[in-house]
Image (cartoon, rainbow, N blue to C red):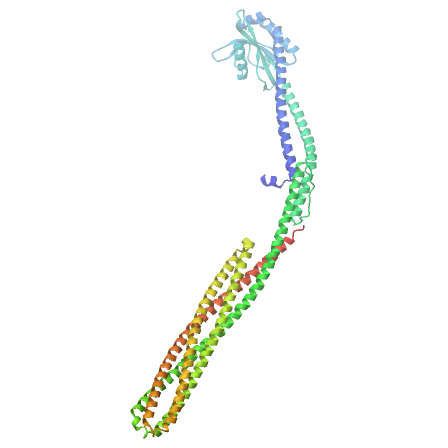
Length: 579
């Protein structure tokens, strides 16, 4: 029933409800009318019945009735006169079916004495005057009212084999006012159900015609009144299909006010659609710009990673070359120790220098060759340290570039965060990625600062090494000159051994200085090796960080592409609306 009700149109529901209301009202009015008619008809019928009872009572001689009631069998002649009067009343009154007289007193069984019967009734019943007879309950109720009120009364309508009846009970009193007998007349009541039936049939016909007419009138009125609702329904259908160009007629009635609200809603909806469209275009433009910026940033990060890889390769090459140079310096140190020992031995053997001049000459030549080797090694090491200084400056420049790119990435992350806050819920994931990019940029900037600090320390150490190498180079040149001088003096050994001894002392002293300088060079080279190792590790960390940043930039690019696709889809959805 509920499903069927929901399937009905508003017009059908309205007409159906109207019919139900009309049926309720007409049914109520019909019931009230029927009740009033029934009461009126019964009132008329009761008055007619009592008049009939009075007519029957007036035809009888009450004195004879009182005498016959005393002994119906003994008072046969008088009873026959009563029978004639009862038959006469039955014949004259068409509505009376039968009449009879009963005593007023009941016996122990609650039965009443039959005083006399009309001939028609005597022919159909077995009871005879002078006998007692048990009357029906509805008859006894009327009897009780007669005995209590001492006035005439009647039974309700009842039916038997002969038809529908009511019985009128008229009391007969003695001189003291006591009821001694009751005259009963059965009045035909068939007119009551017949009249009721006719009234019901006519009432139903009137109700049906009234409902039909009222339904037709209500249908026409409601149909005409709901015509604007059809326009509203059509407008809602077109809006549901995306057509916002619809505008309904505005009138001063309720439907017109609803139409005005509808038109106002459509206008506001148009404004919302336009704003969403503009926002979608801005989001699409911003996502495209972000995608381009992300691609540029990705290319820059790739360039940085490539530079860092090359730098790490150079550092690794430097790291592998430093041990070789360290071996050379160690060898030079050993040679300088030999020179020192030789110089000491020459001091001890200065007195025999003349005898060993030829041997000393060879040693001088060997010393000159060794000094040339030391000079070349020192020059090579100076070139390497200078190259390391140049590399350190290049690394410093690259770190500056990394710091600049980190600042750029931080600015892009800030810009992406602002754009994500404008996109509200759609940009929440993008805001998280932008925040991660910003954190990564801050980490990159911190790492770049650490690298710059290490490079600064490396450059300081390198500059000290350059100064030391220059000093060593000068000392080597001085040694060369001294050796050359020793060679010149060696030719005069035979002339002055003491001079040779002094010169050997000078050579021994210079050799000690050179040994000390070589030890300093060893220390500097060891420190340079440690710095190279540390910088190699830092460059590896920076490379990993930049690779992570590159992956983050790629994630941002993917999010930008996704945002661009979403904005395009939003524009397509908005394009379905016709304004």
